[in-house]
Image (cartoon, rainbow, N blue to C red):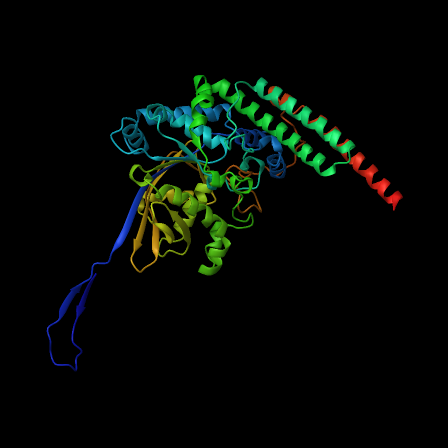
Length: 473
């Protein structure tokens, strides 16, 4: 910074002086490669429903069904993840070059991060398998803050297994079905026993546990079937080597933290909320900023900056991330809290997008009317600047897209569809409900009638107990 000191007109002439001030600034740059997951079974189901001509209201109802909880990759999604791996092994620049360099040890390995939802977990592990096979020391961080930001069933994770770990894939769909049936039957016996003993609270907990077992079995069976059909040897690798490489910070293992439901309001349209004043804007998007701060902290803390970062995540969260930066192209209107390791402490950084003409495709992804193709990759730099005595800034620059950006048509009256949530072309007419239960998936939920019978029995016992109390009174 150069300051020129000149005399005032009424003073006698003096020589002008040029003073150079060198401000101290700490700058950290990390190259980020964000991979969208492959097609999920929910993605395939909603597309099939629309092809059948059902209404958008029915698609939204379908999206809430428990069988789509933590929706895994479809057979097509598995093939897409494996195809991405092949492209990365053959490529010569961008993410491919970074992975090859890290695999042979000639440069620092990137920080590997995946969402807590298994379609992103499986996409990340399958696409990066060649790096993980070459570097047995690498671990893959599971970050709940990357969870897709919607309220539908596929945006919620399965409960953690014993040992605070994600449920690994099962050997076969039949094994998942049998395990789910045995667990559900055992839990239902406990429901009936505790209900008859008038232990109402324990009976309700046992019923909830039985339902969870049934849902987990359904999802694992669906995952096993898709992997067996398309994954080949990769299916066994995921179970024996891939999932054991996952690492979940114990601080993120609490149920209310692991299932990260911080998200924007469904009524919030990004194109309009940006018109708010700075204070109202910051308050409206506070949940999103907290999540983005957690993601930024994971990428920028520790030694990850040298090798960059690779994320396997979701398209709606990517859209909201890019949108948050794009609101600060001229000035940092939004700020995120960053918790940095290595003794750096915490810092609040304003978000900016230093965009150029080449960023057009990236900028379009910040719109609610576009989305990234399955297994597409968006790459960008995150630059954290911390000047002494001034507010820190986190700048997104050098953004590029390796994939297809497609337009999305919004149904009438629907302002903010999710990427994996219902949205797209509304056909506008009703259709009878068609429940596409098939094969092992249908068998996996065969415990549901048993659960309903148990619930009826429980309600009967509770009602009888209340009648006895009224008579005694």
